[in-house]
Length: 436
Image (cartoon, rainbow, N blue to C red; front, side):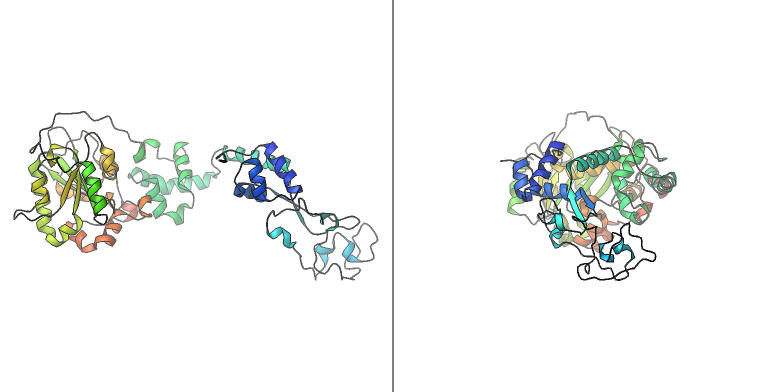
C-alpha cells in the first residue's frame, strides 16, 4: 500500500503511537498501522521525548551506578533529607551532593524505541526515564508551527550588520546565492532567511534590486530570411539527440543572439554547457556572415587542435544568422571542425542553459537598449563579471574556475578572459562605468 506523503501527524495519530509503544510494537509495525514511513515514526518519538527523574515504589530517583552497594551516611551536614533515611542512597539529593556519583544510563534507551513506554521494569527503576506522551508532543508540534510563522528572529543589531554587508552587494547586481557563498563566514545564516529579510523590507536593498525579480515582456515574432532554406535537413533537434547519444563524451556548446535596439548592433553568445561559461561577441548586424566571421576568428586564434576540443558539437538557435551551417562546420580548406544542429522553432527551453545565462546580460544591458555605444572590450568585461558569479549548480564554483579546470587556463588567456574578485562582481549597468 502506498504511504501518504507530506501529511502531518494528528493528535489521534500520536495517541495511537503511544498506545502501540505501550504494547511494545516496533516503529515498522506502527508505521504500517498509521500508513507512515517507519523513519517518520522514529523522528516523531525522538523529537518529542520527555525526561522524568522519578523513582520507584518506596525509592526516590537515583541514577548512581553505585546505588545498590553504597553504604554512605551523613554526606550532607546537616542532613537535607525530609525523612530520616539510614542511607544516603535512599535520599533524592544523593546524586547532587555525593562526590563519588557516577551516572548510569539504561542501555535500552540507546536503541529503538528510545523510550520507557512499554517497559515492564519501569516500576522498579530509579534511573532517569524517557517517555513519549501524545498531549505533550501535540503541544510542541503546535508551538513549532507558531514559531515558524512569527517572522525572522534577528535582533536589530544583527539585521543592521547583515544589511551593511549584503545590501551593497545586491545593489551591484550580485545574486544572494553568490553573496552567501563568498561571505559565508560573515553571514552565517541561510539564503532563504536573507530572501525573507529583503522581502520584509528590513534591508536597504529591495526586491526590485534582486536580479531574479526582473521580468521581461514577451518576444515579438518576426519574419526571418535564411541563407540556406535546407539547412535544417539532418540537423534537427531530434538528430542532435541521436548524435549526442552516439557521442556522449563530446561537450556541447550553445550559440544564440542577444539583440539591443531593433536594427542595431547585436551580440553572438557562445555558451559552454558543462562549465556554464559564456562568451559574447559584438556584431554590427544580425546576419549569417558576422557569425561565420566570429567562428573563423576563434578557429585562427585558438588553433585547430584547441578549437576541435572545445567546439565539437554546436546547438544553435533557429535564427537566420545560423542558416549557413557549412561555413560554420568546415574551415576554408574544407576540413570539418564541428557539427551544428538546430533547436526546434519556438523552443528556447531546448538550450535552456544559455537562455538562463542571458538573464545576467539583461541585468547589465536591459532589453531595448541600443548596443551601438558599446565596444567589444566593454562586452568582454561584462562577461568576465558574469563568468565570475558563483553558481549553485556548479558546486558553488564560478564558470571561470570550472572552465579552467575542464579545458585549462591557457585557453582562457587565449580568449582574453579574466576572473573578477568575488566581492567586486557587478551585474548592473554600472559595470560599464567601472570599465571606463
